[in-house]
Length: 270
Image (tube, rainbow, N blue to C red; front, side):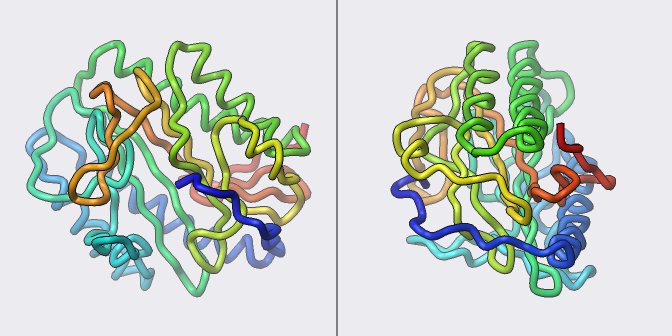
């Protein structure tokens, strides 16, 4: 949550360390492929979570969400959020339905290094409005990846992300942001998907070795959110759908390396 920007500089990673993070990223990518294949009408969200937990165990990976501290420790290895739920949804007995937007976020640590990613799955036939929301959300993330290979400061990237979402008539959630990542899941810096006075004051350089979990949250309606009584699930205040997508991205000499991609992906420097 964006309460105050971390005061310390990011911890830059060596090419070797980025390679180790990629190994964790491959496991996260595999988990999200599994989630996508299971996201069908009639499936309970807890069934997806249990499948991811089993996959992590089989790969020797430590799930990073389960037990995450809060007023109530997070009880699952995935966050599964549906429709108006933005992020941090708790898997349970809810049954997935035709037309749902299913946001699935997960992270793991492998051999001491972390990776974190999220997808939005359109379940069956969704409305044209929901489909456009998903397309724009994915475009916002793609824009971040491309602009990171071109720009010197994060604020430049965030400004492009915000313009893509808002020019489509949608809003960017401002209460929650991305983060640095490495040996632990949440490192400096905080990574907003928008530009405001705080970001301009605490802007950071896109230098070689920087690794960020970039995760835009785009709402169909207003940006305002609330948290449910479970102390975790974040929902849009107006009840309209939201989209959440995320990749772990590394700035390298050659360009932006997508640590959590399905296949080896490098966006070359412009």
